[in-house]
Length: 434
Length: 128
Image (tube, rainbow over all chains, first blue to last red; front, side, top):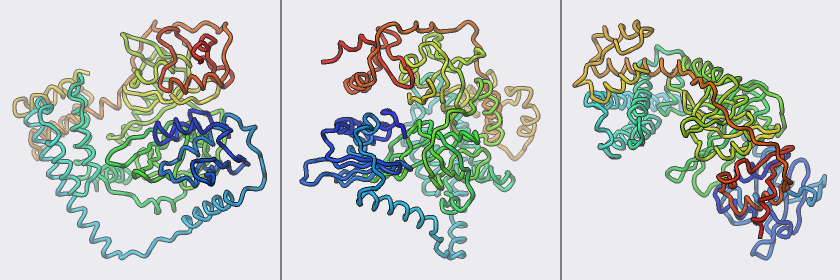
């Protein structure tokens, strides 16, 4: 497995771990170090009497360390992997694993098998039905209130929305939480989080308000909608789908390229969004991982890595969100299809909109894009002179220019309509994170 | 998109002061607009919300990229100077983790050759 420094550092939970990890990517810090096809391991002399035992599962990237850190991966795991990527030759390659490594790998396999075999607990169907009906009533009542609230806004006009303050939106968001519609609560909070200082906020506010209305009204008419769209409406409102049930379904096995990892933090919960692309099936996927502060995440997917895995998609008119049913190994793929032009992207978006009118942003890998400047803004130009403004120009444009040198690049963008951010590029057949 | 601007303008003022008007939608949406406007069960706020929802979907379904002829960027000249290898590049990255590598002064500062990142020799004077 060839990992770049950027890919490894992208796994770090914070900047201080990145820095400490780099400091530990030094041969003098490691008492022993070895690897084989399955794993990478090393013993790092820390402040204690015994060195810390650090190990990395190379098949399905995962870390374990005997240090007391609650960060995940810890600085030792990052340091070891960084050192391995830089100086593989100083690691001894052995067929047999140290006992502590083989024990950990064995437990991981055992755990996976147990999860696969895990049978669902028998459920009290009558009680379950009663709970479902009670929730349905709560959501229906909540949505009636939400509609009145939305209509009030429209009746009085949105002109004075910037003066309303957070409490105005938070009140309705809390009402939606009480109504057991957390998805709608998030949408109300996003509505209130509109940047009212930005030119054109009115349009952004109306888009958000209308999406909320479409979902609320969709729920009121849910029985008349196609089955998959019903699932989208329910998911947007906040009804959850049993992941165990999903994992029982047959998934899609492919060599998935990890296009990007986006991390956000709110109320002590870190949300990691992994954007994937199936190189054989041309299917894009979004994997979400929620991590409570202080706990480690189960998934460690590095942007730029090809992961052989079976994914199961959540039911949707335009499937995107998925979960990993089985992670098989890592691989490398060089040939796969990309979007030919911005027009090709637009046509695909039209198809998605017809299936899912309230869909969110999606990733696209677009061929031969060149950064160009128009009226002091940076845009991405395709081979047919179609241009699209670069949403995150401030963060990425200089790296993009340095890699491009004025030549076109194949670029991964995430967004919708006329708002796309660049997250990664191919250059000389190497995927670089921006 | 005049129709979307009209939607936003009506929303700004509020339906109490400005009645929603189906004519603000494009002709292609006349049928849908007619169905909404003739639905007696809808009050004017809901009528507007439905017209606006149809307009939003029409807008996002027909979003087209802008065509700009004659816009381009100068291609970087072929690298002539000696280049430093990956190791010093990493050291620079360590010193300036968030620094976009002197782009503002020197233009194309990083080149990528054979899957590895290199930087120009003139970086070297940054070493201690």
